Length: 509
Image 1: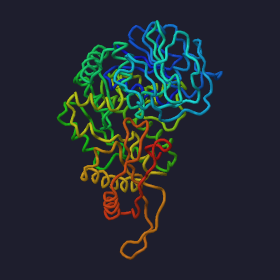
Image 2: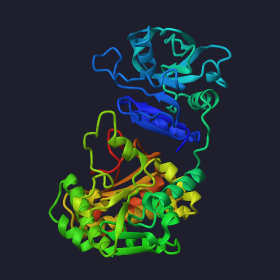
Image 3: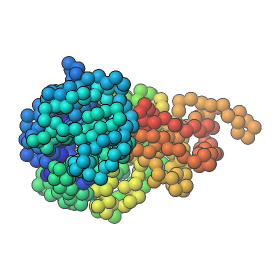
Image 4: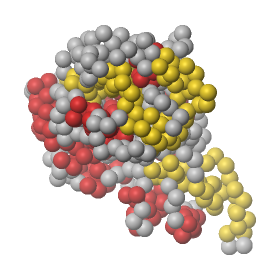
């Protein structure tokens, strides 16, 4: 990808959000740790320094080498970046008398500055820092202030270097995207040519060159990522792509056949492998969430390896890995503490001897959907909610039995079908049901019951990194609860999960 923007990560929770805002301008960007970025900067047209939870005054503060960037490429320093430039370039940074978090309004903007084109005084910005710049660095000129922060923005004369103490990438900075556009397009002159069509054209050409006449095997899940990856690869190598869709016995109700039916007519070479009994047998008696995930991952690799051996001379394994997985693995903090293992990034056993190809590894989830639309993939398939790689195993709390899987499949079907019939499905990013390891006393037909409790979960999100619970209509919740209890034998109580991520995760395990 040419005309890149390089984003240096200092550990801020907002770094990915900066990338998303840049991509929304049809500008390609990449995130790298501040201490491990490419030595060849020739492809880059601009650099953005992100925020950080650190103070520039701390001994262990991130200390980037900007010698190949500053004064040589247009640079925008955000929050920590702005304080870093001040602290180490002749200015002064000190602890604020009051912690500066939340909404603020610009009270002064220097006239005639391209960075603030179309931005008026009183524009709302979002602050998030406990230090503040008390004196500007050498050759710096104040561009903007808020009521509490004198040096909210500045530029350094003689360089194309701009710095701001607020976060333009967050929703609460009302003109944030406009400021980013002013910097990247009008000041740095970065072309806005990163479109789904351009990505498809370039990626198909890259895959043709990389793969040649080699055979590639891909594990389809029925989800958006693997489907888009498959269609991209099919455009590049045609019959040399072999797709395998494994039923692990933990899919949604009738999903194995439904997904196979969906792929008919797409021109893909797809083989369905029903290995449900094998997976459920291996999972018998296992309750620990990570052990469940690892068991499913191991058995999947075994089944997949058996099937791939039936194809002669396969050289590549294709995966639907997307950019958040890549960023996480090269985080400035190193690989993050394991919250839960990811089914795409665990690596392959040595005996598989396959090279990896990941055509979507530089895209966010919403970008994958737009690429899929450009490829002509059925909107219904592209609109499918994300579904976890380990399937219903992590929505059955505790050990897994065929009976529990059947109950949860039936509950989930009532819930998802209800969302669709009420016109709510496309307003939800992800939804599902969870079978809880508790029984509840109930009354049915004047008889006492002691049966299972299920929780319903529906969240809105953009890429799953953060998520809020959806305020589903009470009438809908009442109807779907009644339908579940009346139609699914073994369930007598339904609850609705109103936790957001963070602190909760989207899945319960």
